[in-house]
Image (cartoon, rainbow, N blue to C red; front, side):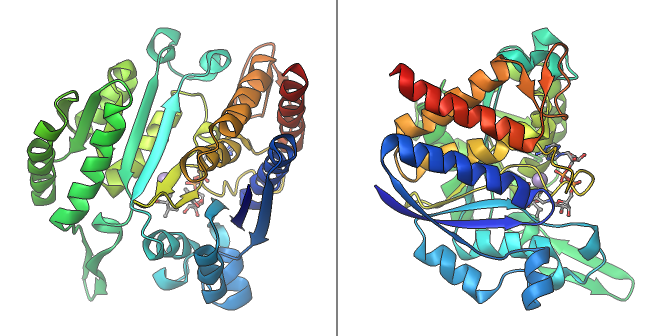
Length: 359
Ligand code: NAD
Ligand code: IPM
Ligand code: MN
């Protein structure tokens, strides 16, 4: 199978984790006889420095002609004080919006060997298997007006009913092929948009009689996520709530460096990006955890290319690498062996090649 993959490494640790991810995909291509054609584009701070804009036209053109997109991370202190249209993050928001990637899937599940790395108790994190379905192209991130005028500053939380309906439907569909439970997270005790969100969930629910539906207010959901995370199967929520809850949920796995994501539109096209950011505090040190990026690539193989065996080969390789005790610095595990970004990549690739020999 021949596939064109756009690589947008971005800033900070983005290029470090992307380099490893590309190597892993090359190992998969070789083992399973595929041809992945990689082409790199600029986005974020690097694009601002080189082209004066966080999302150059060539990058959009590259994404449009590709079969899928892999994105590292954008941002960094260098651009923190820039006006909002010249912030790296604008590039990321822009490409999500431009490509119509409204459904952001963020799976969070326990990896047995990482249980001791979580700051939470073993009994709390040992059976976590949840999926956050985050709306990605609407809400307060995109509503207008947004800006400053004199003493006043405004951001607007805006959704159309159609935007709410399509993400809620996605949540139901995913719950129906998982454990059949959907938790809709909102702030319906305060926000009008959340009231419409809740009404929408209740209106669609009868179409999915096998899915048990529950509503939680976001403040309480944040608490439940660390009190009893096993209760969750699929969580569907709006853009900003999903952003915040997913970073919180990452600690159930032990590190933000473990969470992958898929940003999808309805035809299956997707951009695959780790949940974490550019981690300026560790950039350039060769210690970033590349596993969120690598597992995002596995999601790409599964969701956009329907290459299930190949996706699983990556996931199994990652799991075995961790089971053998290898990990990056962000994961604190007694008796483990700490490696840098490249060291972990090598181990994962060894596992991929080894699985091949066993078969
Ligand atoms: P961050 O996710 O970059 O980092 C938070 C903490 O987690 C840091 O201590 C970092 O070292 C650690 N961390 C994150 N990923 C890691 C990895 N793979 N391996 C090891 N440790 C990891 O969040 P932040 O520091 O709040 O933001 C930094 C910049 O990244 C900001 O400019 C922000 O806007 C941007 N950001 C970008 C994305 C994205 O591109 N998708 C996502 C989040 C934040
Ligand atoms: C994420 C990030 C982005 C978001 C930022 C960098 C715009 O935090 O992907 O989770 O808020 O969506
Ligand atoms: Mn985030």
